Length: 383
Ligand code: NDP
Ligand code: MG
Image (cartoon, rainbow, N blue to C red; front, side):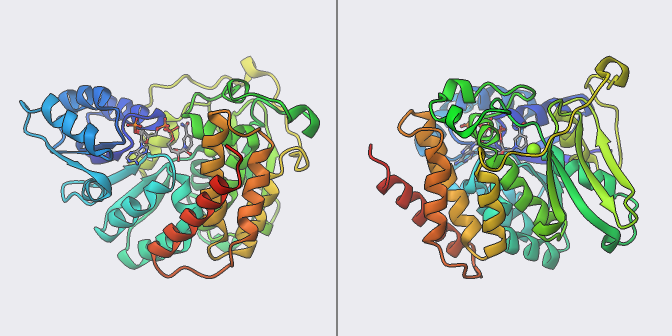
């Protein structure tokens, strides 16, 4: 199987692991894209020899051009550059591993260019799910999940002839670094503490989202779009070991789960090679070494983001876009120690209240709702 991949967000946690998968199986890389980490991008270009490299930041793009002037790679910049990489003719599949809403237009560009998308960038579906899924259907392309929970569900659904036979999707959550803490105990937690995830090594934004459990909230919305499932049929269960990656319950109450070591290279590879499976470099799962697996209900009082996300998707329209934009901005402020941990859900909730649940018909409307929510968060934070 020869695959030609356009990889957006190649310098990040998912991006570098995608390149490990590509290296192992000899997949080609026709385009790479990142925000500004030109040092790593240069190394990746020298190894994988893509025809196109997109750097969002204009100054960094100029720097990269100088660094790789001896190579036959075209360097482009800005959102146009990112969309060009997402729609490059040579790609069989576009892996979108950028972080944040900035991934929405490139996802739309890939879909319009009739490319299948291996999607790690969950914010794309949270903010613009209706537009992305409709465009994918119209263009006859697939959105293949990279997020481990959604990959698990996708794997459990293989061979299921009637989606209506599925009664429930059950997403597992690690619970993050603050599992078991009360709301009061969360008042003074620091970014350093929040960045210490027990099971996964990930980018800073998704790690903070895991600590607030907004990550699971975003994933409920992501699952609802990917698998056309109402939120009332999506459950969350805390599973500390991150071995059961998610489950589906059929109408007859038979439950299927996908298990494996917590290593993103499994779902990344499956999204790229689907429907085939190839050998993987990860550790084999040993159930006897683990002995026991534990499951708990989530604490929605201590972690209100979970409830907010459910509310957002139930209200629908542009509310999830506002929720996501407010969360992205609040996470940045928390990481730079400008707001407290518990202010993240407060600001998100307040931004959601200001957003009418109109249905977006264009990505520009989604971007506008996102921007309004961000402005609101910035204006309402005493800096
Ligand atoms: P990282 O922060 O590690 O990496 C983010 C990547 O996006 C970097 O390559 C960064 O480039 C790039 N990027 C950021 N902004 C832009 C921009 N404006 N234009 C182009 N590229 C940009 O994030 P992760 O890899 O952890 O996460 C990526 C996505 O995958 C997120 O949506 C996350 O929720 C999701 N995800 C991640 C998992 C994980 O295990 N890490 C698990 C499941 C989902 P640069 O380095 O130049 O800044
Ligand atoms: Mg996940």
